[in-house]
Image 1: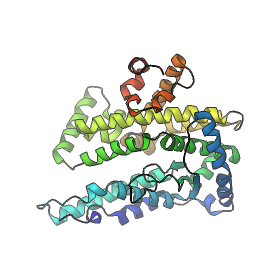
Image 2 (image 1 turned 60 degrees about the vertical axis):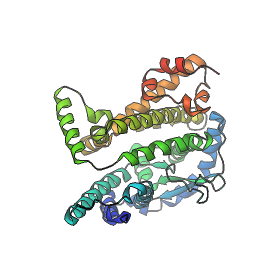
Image 3 (image 1 turned 90 degrees about the vertical axis):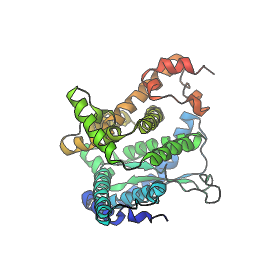
Length: 361
């Protein structure tokens, strides 16, 4: 008999911790919050059109903007985790596991998840609802007529605009371009979202607790640090404690997201031309903000593998530049034709290998 999912994770405790870590933002409780809704309702359709012109990808339905606070972002992501992890959480409990050990594990898991979500909720500006877009319950496929949601975290946007003196209208259109670019990729390329979910589900299936694996990971971390290697810099704690199969899946996800983010940054930069005069400044400031985190923020980024992801995303931009230099500005369209054309992380770092493997159209 399977144990209920909530016996494995104390979700309520995780949420309470996350909301406490997230805190509140006075700016979002002022008159400045209301214009956000009107602006994004206006800018999301504009961004969708600009991205469609740039990429040529046809996206079904219409995107909808939803302005949320940090607690709203936390709730959306906890709901997403519960849905994504349902196969693992619903697995039979270990028969000989002491009840006290189970309670401790639930509490520690809630503290860890809540702390991470609370920290991230203070930094995220927008999020395309990729993993958790509404599915058709009868077919199990993403509904193509209902449209989907792009979230914008209002408090963080207001803080960022004030801190860097960003013109609000320009910055909000720029953010909309970023999220709508990702929507165009995952809804305009029919195989991309199912392939991504397949990889993520594979990681979930492999995520079985193994104390010996944790001990091996710690020993490897210490040994490689002594040898001058940096496993944390290569992928955070996930890379340290992953099995060989998990590392293979992580590498596939990394290659795919490197391409998606690199193509996304290139697309939004081009789509912004003539419409957002300060777009280049926004990109430079936000990149500097991510790369130059200090103190606890830097530590969290390393533990979560965010630093490794940022390096992968830069490699994705360089990959796009390399294949366009060889085959022209629409070279990426060759990738969208079929999943077999997706570059590996090795090919992202060595574009010549992909050019040799995948012939020109």
